[in-house]
Length: 162
Image 1: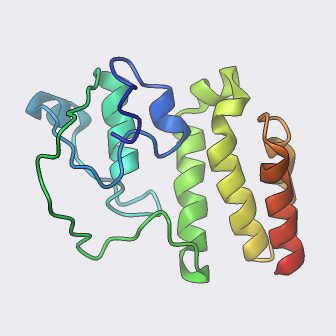
Image 2: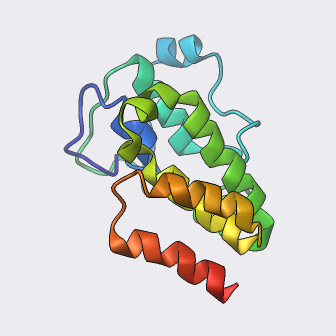
Image 3: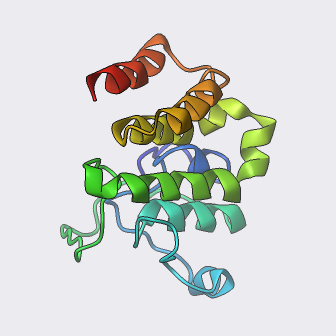
């Protein structure tokens, strides 16, 4: 867990950013996986997303953190990484973040600031693709998320740079 102090009911924090899972290995009870129906979704833009899976897990159960490292292996198995932002992956990033905004809309409607990571990522991806109108739509949403000055200036920098 990236935020080891976050335990128990972390259903809201799990959807706001890649806070709960990334490279650490998840241990999930079998009945939780069976309740979800699958581990990874292929329709979210970024296949094999640990973050998306862990966010779904956190919606139906409480979580905890094991302090010590239990494994020392990392294999990507050819899946796309969320941190890849080259042109090839921009469409997938947009799909990925839009699905989070849609799936967890009730969380974000009650507190728009929680959507900041997703809105910011979509805005920058559209600007990098030179889709100014779409980028500006998400930039306006970013203004509602209590973004910092830096978070408001970087998309404009990307827009002007590209």
